[in-house]
Length: 306
Image 1 (cartoon, rainbow, N blue to C red):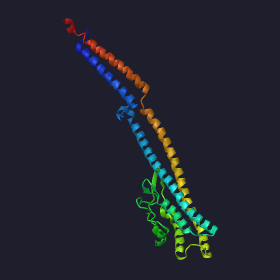
Image 2: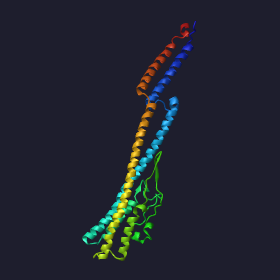
Image 3: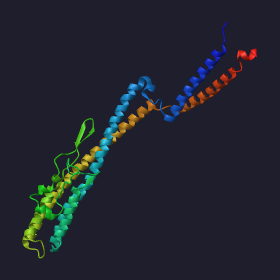
Image 4: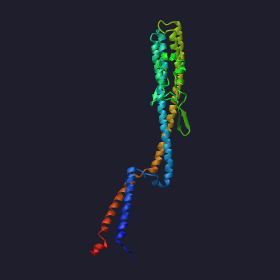
């Protein structure tokens, strides 16, 4: 004969109630987090695979962050190159217009303005740092503020205080790219032209009436400006090519990350329909267990003895 005790019944009912509450809590957690588990322990044997996938995901995201930073820098450099080229092109155009009109009054002021445009491009900042200063990102790379300053310097090289360190960026596991330019390598040829014109003006003022010697001198500067602007344009083209390459790498990495995210999702995301069903069944089971415990209070042998 099997003996049934009141204490045994209570213990069994309470154990079932506690287990049901645990299942309800687990289902509720899956619904709130939308994940199968909140730590690796909850994933059991697949935890090692998830760790490897998470590590790969973090590494790719790191490369994406670097690539986006580099892309933004290259974009800022592209705008700066446009302004520098405008300075060289504007200088040439000012001389060409003066020669065509036969009047050179005001030419030096125009050249000063174009020099300022080029200087502003070389001294441009990105995220608070000078783009073309090399490693000395806190120091303005061009120190000659006017044509007079440029002519007064011992040489054109003394107008540039950037160092020779160029930024190198690691874009993925096997790609490193030198993504910066230096102010002196961009602007030396152009600044030499501006310096020569200012020096000439210091000994032979460039004013009306224009002499044959001045006309010949100014005419010779046109081809020099063309050459300097062409060099700047070539550098801008290299910058654009690097930008295209970075954008291509970023596109590939984002596709990899999307695929990896989808793979992780299949392993970690909870089945919401199943979780809601489990929660509802657990709530019903909790109510049933509670009713059983309530009824057990009415079937004690003591009630019958009374």
